[in-house]
Each structure stands twice: as C-alpha cells, then as structure tokens.
Length: 528
Image 1 (cartoon, rainbow, N blue to C red):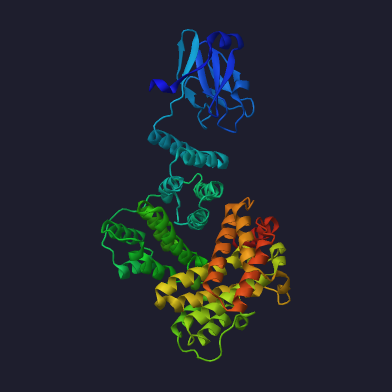
Image 2 (cartoon, rainbow, N blue to C red):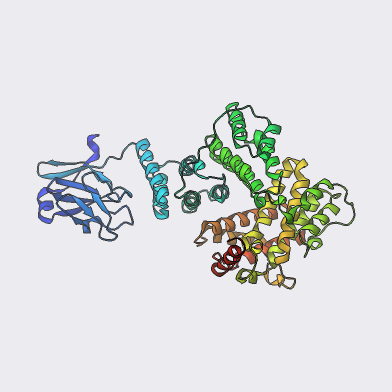
C-alpha cells in the first residue's frame, strides 16, 4: 500500500483507556477496538442496516455483535458468521504509541467482483434490502449498475424451468424508465433493483435446468417447425448456430415472432416476450443474447396453446377464412361489445377486408373497453368453475398483447391475420365478465399527458407486495402510453386512457382462499 493512504487515527493510550473509539475522516466512520489480539479496525456502521458497531458487543474471541439485529462478525477478518454481508476491516499499525490505519480502497476490479459476489448471495436469500445496498455500492464505485442485471440474467436463465417469466419482460420495461431518467440516480437504481429482485424471486430455490447442447445452422423454417414439434434441442441448437455465425436479434426476430403467433400461445405472453427480448438485448448488449434467447425459445416450446382447447377452436377456422371480409363500414370498438369468443372471431373475419391498422385500432378499443367495464365483483365470487378464474390482470393482457402486435406486425405484415384474430380472442374471452352499465364517464381522462406522468410516479413507487402485480402495473402503463403516443382514433384513445385509469385505482384480490377450497372440493369429488 502507498504510504500516503495511512493516517493517524488515535493515541494508543486513549484507545486502551476507553477500549473502543470512533475515528472520522472524509465521511467515513471507523471503529477502533483494543482487543486481546491487538488493535482492530472496521467500519462503524453495520452493513445490515447501519447500526453503530461501537455500541456492539465484543467477546474474547473477537466476535463483534451488532446489538440491533444480532448480526455477528469475526472482527479479525470481517467475515459474517451468519453468511450475510461482510464487514470491512482496515490494516492497523502501532507507530510510536499512535494507532495508524490504512484507508486505501481495494482496486476497482476487485471491489466490483466482491460486490457482484455479495449480490449473488443476496439473490439466493431473496434479500431485497441487501440487493438494494449492493446495487448502490456498485453505483458508488463508478461501475455500470446494469452489470448487476447482466450478471443476474446469466445466473438465472437456466433456472427458469419453462423459460421466460414476467421478470425478464419487466426488466425490459424497467430499462426503458432507466433511460428516461438520466440524471436521477435514485430512480435509475430503483429500476435496476426491481429488475434484479423480480428475477431473484422467480428463481428462488429453483435448481438449474441445463439447456440441451448442440449447434446447428440457423434455418427459419426448420426453427419454426421445431418449436411446433416441441423439439427444444433442435430449436436451441439453431439459435446457437446463428449466434456462432454472428447473427443478432434482428436475424432471429421474424422466426421468433412466427413461432410466437403460430398458436394463441400462453395467453399472448409469447409474442410479448419476443418484443421484450429484443429490447433487453439491444440495451444490455450481445453478452446477454445467448441466455435470453435460449430461455425465450424454451418458453416458446413449452408454451400453452389455448387455441387447442374447445373455447378457442374456432380460431383456426377463422384464420382459414381470413381475407373474405367486406370493405364496408369502418370497424369500431362497440362492434365487439358483449361478444363471446366465437362471435368475436367471426366479427374480425367479417372486417378482414379493411386495412390491418384500422382493425387493430378497433380491437384495441374493444379490449380497452373490457378493461374499463370489468365486473370487479367477479373477484369476490366463490362458487365458480376453474375456467372462470378471471381477474384484473387477465384484462391488462389485452392491452399489452396489442402493443406487441403493433410492434411486430409493423415489421412483419404477413403476421397481421393471426395477431388480429388473437386480439379478438382476448376480447371474446373477457367480454362475458364485463358490465354494460359501468360508469365509464367517471374514469375519463382529460389531460392524458398529466395522467401518464402521474401513472409513472405510481409505478416508480408502486408499493405492491407481489412482483406479479407491480410488473403488470409497469407493463400496462408503458404499453398504453406507447399506443397513445403512436396515434389513435379519438374514441379508442379515450377508452384506453379511461380503462388504464380505472385499473390503476382498482382493488386487486390476489388470494382466493374460499374459491380455491371450493374448486378443490369439486375437483376431488369427481376425480378422487
């Protein structure tokens, strides 16, 4: 260590008399202890929640106890005996009856590695406050806070057994807000924290589920076929082959979008996740491309295919009839009001002669109307069948899926028919759970820009106890904002802003205790 990093902290006589002292320099507080092992020095603030360690207990083994939460440290090494954050200690020398300590910081690369290792421990413990501290330490070090997210993605991708979850998708949206808030370190670190913590929560106690190996040349047709056949090994091998050939996300995007829309996949999540993957890779760099793409493709392979269940079997027939509709009257959101799945599909086919964007706007408005008129009392009904388990979050999917549709179909227009029909599936599925007499006027938004600003303030400090709730707040607000900014017919814009307004003020019932018991009893009565 360079000599100029050493500084006089106290006289040895004064320390021996009091047993412990606090030395302050340039914002630091360093506790000095006179022990049977000599003079030892450490940060005065407990790394847990900042309690002054000078007030802690010290035994003959040099075990220092923080008396606030009983954390214990080996004062000689700084090791946390409970496996949490360690305590920084400082080299000490006695020079001519004076206590000198070395204030030199470890090299940046070493400190960065220590922080990321500690962050990994925090994720494994699902310790939200500790994750926040480690991300703040990374920022204070001058490193890129997004390294915390990059490292989290690498460590988590194989632990998502069935591929992508809302945690990755939410990270893409949090990064959008991160970039919008340049200069506001507090808001930016909040975006990183929410991303990292949601991923940690989703993979908590999950083992690794290694991806099948192999490398094959990228072939879009063969890739789509492999996903259709649920052949994970072949589909993943093609992604690896494309990456090895230097392909970027744009080279895979059409194949991924086709595979996502080949069915009414995973209640629309598949296409949403494709759009978010592009944003994440574009923002975080090619170093996260492989883990994100492999996990995304795993999700496409394992996705539920709702169009294969009876309620949605009209989808394939509607797709086969696409294009035979009239170029007549302009479709409007009210055309789908109250229509179930079958009639909603038929209505979409009847309008298939108009331009896709006109039909898109009408279907977006229909789904926004559903959000605005959801029968919130349905949340409290107990004696209903499992397939009626519909709630607020189900209604938001109609908006977020629509946003993904416009993005991907603008790039690949041949996908409009399947995407628009799936928007009709959303409308038809949710319409039976709406009220005709809901007072939409009370939710009308006059100042849309001001409303969106307030909505984003709510998102930044959402207060939601579950990540699944906070991520739906986030993605619905951003999807609606993007559609409103893209330009909508006035009636559609009014429905979308009013529907979002009502959702943001809604009570979300998340645990259906009695309903779950009722449905379980009905199930076992039939099947034992």
